[in-house]
Length: 253
Ligand SMILES: C[S@@+](CC[C@H](N)C(=O)[O-])C[C@H]1O[C@@H](n2cnc3c(N)ncnc32)[C@H](O)[C@@H]1O
Image (cartoon, rainbow, N blue to C red; front, side, top):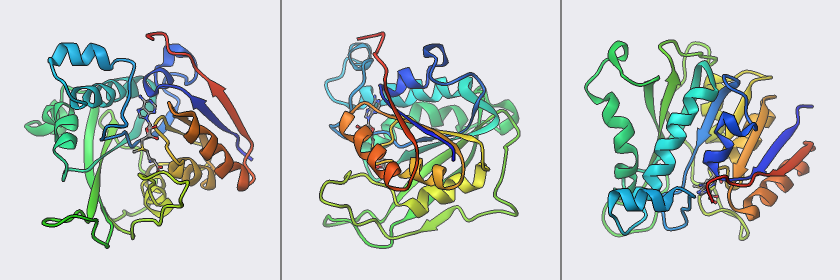
């Protein structure tokens, strides 16, 4: 059975091939569901706050997403996929992904200056409304980029870009942002096959790690909060996976 390696690490260290955890051009799919709230941390946060002269977390979140986007180029195989989640009902999320998306806005695939092609936007319809009082959140969305001009597609004749799946019931000790297994499985099934390497450097409760493992993929996960590394390790061990936990010190701290 394929092993699972989980890192207590900053996402930007884990994704950096020079740090040695992930080889260049080895990853079929990166699942990236970064924080969009106050819980966000990055060792490059200060650098960005200085640069943007800001006093909130948005520039820091932008730094995580932008650097992660750039690093993905080096570790993805040609045609490999990057799924980046957002939630455009929140202003911060629009700001975070804009610098990446603007690059794609007015250009066709051929003339995109980026290493990646924007493939599609996939909606997770949560069916049940979230809390609130006016427009209540019933969906989230994930942007699908791939490396180069030719997508490595494994989803047969095609798959829906709307996933209808109720929001999960979060266990009391669970992660508030836990993605349902069915949702991440839908994404991964489209672009991976057994034996492929899947990476989630901001794995939280580990839904994408479990989905990839169940599909027979090799998996590398990470989170900068040890609580979620231990949580995901337990989750995978309960399924019978062999889990190796490692710590990666940050060079930039
Ligand atoms: C939105 S949650 C991910 C939820 C996950 N998709 C799931 O299904 O449970 C984001 C996670 O990223 C982690 N995180 C935030 N900043 C990070 C960073 N710079 N490096 C690594 N992990 C980070 C947080 O601890 C949190 O667990």
